[in-house]
Amino acid sequence: MPQLCLFAIVISTSVLVVLLFTSTSTSGTTLLSIHHLQQKALATSSLNNNTTTNDNTQLPKPFTGGQVPISNFTATNTYIVQGQTPEGGVDAFSYDGSGHLKLKSGVIDVDVDPISQTGMINATWVDNENNNWSFTQTQFMPGQQLYFEGILPNGTAKTIIGNDSVAINHWEHGNTNGGAPVLPTVFTYVGTWGPGELWRNGENLGTVGGHMMLTDGVRDPISGKVYAADKASTYNPMNPADGYSDPKTAQVHLIIQSPPGPMTNNFPPQFDFTAHLMFYDIEVN
Image (cartoon, rainbow, N blue to C red):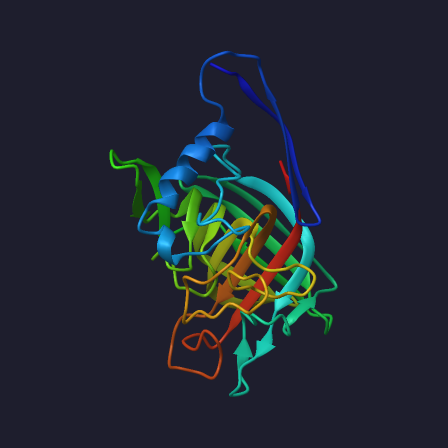
């Protein structure tokens, strides 16, 4: 069986680089071949016919992260997604990229444990009006995620919807039923859910909901656009099967929301406040 050692993982300017050492072996299965088996099964699964496509294949997405758990990292190069809805509210997803704005500074530190379902997330950023923000999370609560569990005898994928608080190597959003279709189906190396404390200029704004993901590239870091499967038109959450993600890149999402309430002119409409931060330069510890 090959021996796999992880020497370093550095993700810079949205490009994922994994430096691995595999000893010579004439038998056994490497991570790469496991990925191919998973892709083959998914290509014939019921999920395949209606989901995010990638690089002109019929696969939802290659398992570029495989079984290597990524749960301790720091990310910078920070943007906020803050567009405008047709009704004049805040569009926190701005699929056309018009609300994708670079901030003066920002960093997120994530150190979580998927086994104990515990950890800590700290994020700080300075917006373009010179407000100093911070978000701290030490409590986690169940979310929704789609796990690949194996290959059935008929060659199709066996999947399950999980409810972990700290989840690794899974899919979210799109038409997975793992979260709302606010983004295309995307492979997620680690995702968390739960309450945290939000601060602005030293003032505690109270407890808010937080959702963090380290995913494949679903938002173009230059244009800010989120694409449909043709990689030209804009993603539409009303058609969640038609989306694109890039397995050669990675990015961190931090979505902070007030408790849901009456409908507003914002998107998503049930939240009076949403801050959607993107971090594109990632260093895995």
